[in-house]
Length: 603
Image 1 (tube, rainbow, N blue to C red):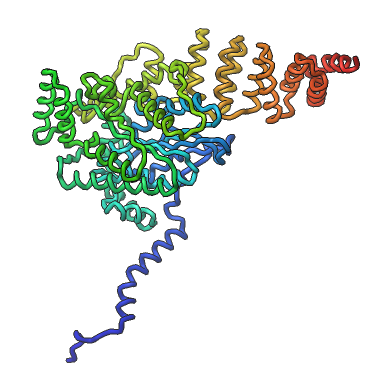
Image 2 (cartoon, helix red, strand yellow):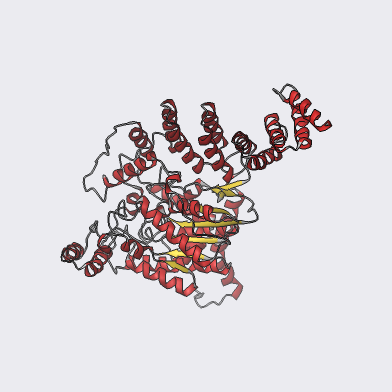
């Protein structure tokens, strides 16, 4: 019998043999693409059918990162122009739930405060602040969204991220992760065959999905699965490396485009929240910190509180090493770093961040978000990024945020603190006191019974029925702020207010709508109210703008003629009255007034 063990084959034989598996994978990949398997989810969509000139982050984008959830997290739905207008200064905010303003989202994020303040302080430019903060994501999602962000021509990018690096989607200890190296994860995620494998695995591993927020822990509990991460363990080091490498990649991609970027350190509640899972000496260190604080040694206490937080094996708060990485990356890429962690300490009792600035373990109270906004604003002002920006005081009472939003936030935090890891008892139900309509509506929002916007509309209706028109206006100001592209909110509210002769309140809502986008409706009624108040110059401006948007509205044409009659410009008045009569010969008073104007012209 001949031996064939030593037979030598030609080189092409080995090339072909070892190429076959890759060719099979390539054919599968091509077949999946041709067959339309797992179609790509667009990053940007139109917010409504009536406003195709705007874009918003697709709420379905998070299905890329979460496979086993019933209710997917999403951004706060900030809308911006599809085609960036000349003179616009566009800012994107990247981060997680704290960036999104939880529990005060959508209207209480630091980005909303920042936009409000910048718009009031920048006389020469339109400001767009687009917040892409999403709960339970981390730097992997930011990397995925970044190319689409850069395509939208940002003038500045703000980054507030790091708390979810271990348990957020695809994090080092997350239930939703690719479980491969940092760079490879970004590479393989682009292949259909990778998505096919993910879906195949999920067929056999599909954890129970909750039916309501009352029956389960929070989103982060489902992602973490209670996985513990001791300080300096391998999984801890993996998360630290993940954060540093991803942040390095993010800053590299942004700075290559010569786009300014501001990153920030991460505050957390360290004084009034002991470690969830203390680990080795964690609780001992925390108690020592409290003892030092009682002795008046706040500096020593601060160091011990930080150490206790770092020893917490449930990594729901970013370790202090992350702030060191953020500062180091800032120097490495020569980008601005604002030290929010130190600022929170300085504004807190004993110089240590606690409950006065934190709602829970890491989400700031409303004044905390305002502080973050102020710090970003001051950095932007100092850097001269926006032409003509002035440090103008803004009235916080005019900010579109209502009592209902505050109660919703309180109940969201109450719900979280009734669950793991704040509560060790299983099956605890959250039952806040429901003393009035605001409490009841808030509870329905928090438990998913009604939508946020419907709750505000229902409360507004109650206020209107009670003749409380300022409170009615406040609710619609909040709605217009959140959904400025839904024209119905402006039109319904302003019409109702004008019916009861509350013209100043109607004017405030019309003006708020006009700042987002001038329409034939809001500019018409602004002009008509201006004319009634003898603000002739402003009335002319608004009414001309309305005519440019709709030249066949007889009411607008008639009132614009009134502006020119007041100014003594009878030729212009005659022109607009003629147009009014041409559009609607029966428009009340138009024909008679036209006769009078023509008589004046003959004199």
